[in-house]
Structures are given as structure tokens and as C-alpha cells.
Amino acid sequence: MDGSSLRAVGWARSLPLNSEVKSARDWAREHLEVLGWTTSTPETVDAVLLTVSELVTNAHTHAHSNAQLILMWDNRCLHIAVHDSSSELPTPRTPSADRLGGRGMLLVSALADEWEARPCPRGKTVIACFRPPEEAISGDAGSGDAPSGDPA
Image (cartoon, rainbow, N blue to C red; front, side, top):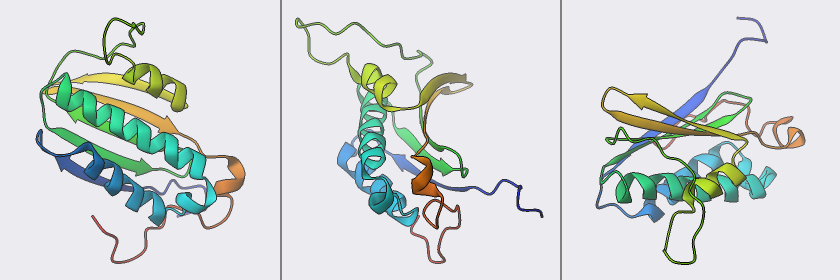
């Protein structure tokens, strides 16, 4: 395999409807530490963790569904994917002082480099992409090589 071949590392976790969103953030933070991001690009880590919170909250609150959370680093982009059982695709709503909520996808739009929602046979998947600053991934951080004994 030549040096230009794509190498990726990824993790997946199921989050039941009754699970706390904090557990999703903590789990994601552990894997961002494995990639070296908590040291090399803490601002991006904060954006990723807020996005994880918003997407898992949306799955639990709006879809009334378990959430399947997947993190995948492909040496260019960290993909945060959350699958739920609702076929209704999210759309950013205009914030209103008259109601709580409704700002989650606006936050995701502001934080992620890009995002999309895809219908699936049993619901939908929302995917947000984060590209860390170039200098943060030029060394070992984000190399795509997960250490042995990686926590799942």
C-alpha cells in the first residue's frame, strides 16, 4: 500500500433513549484524546463535543429514539454521525424568544465545517464534518493509527 492510501479509524456507540447526553460527550472526548486532539486543537474539540450533544439530544428529544453515534477520522475530516429512527430530516429553524430550543442545527451549522442529513431505510443519519487546523494534524496527532487496547 503506498503512502497516499486512505487510512481511517472509527468508533461506534449506541445511546439508549434514557441515556444522558453527558455520557456521549465523555465517550467522544476519550476518542478525541486518542487522536491527540485535546492537546493539539482544543477549540475543535469543544466544537465537536457541543455538536455531539446537539445531535444526540435531537435524536432523543425530537425523534424519541435511541441514538447510534459514530466517530470516524479519515486523516482529513472527523465525521460525527448520529442515526435515529425518525425519517424527518432536521432543518435549522429561526430562533424565537417565545420558545425554548430550536437552535441545535443552527449551532451545528456554525460549528461544523459542513453537515448533511441522509434518509435511511430505518430513519436518518446526520453527519457533521470537522477539519482541524492543518498544523494540528501535521505531526502524530490525528495520524489515524489507534493505539492497541483502544477503548470501544
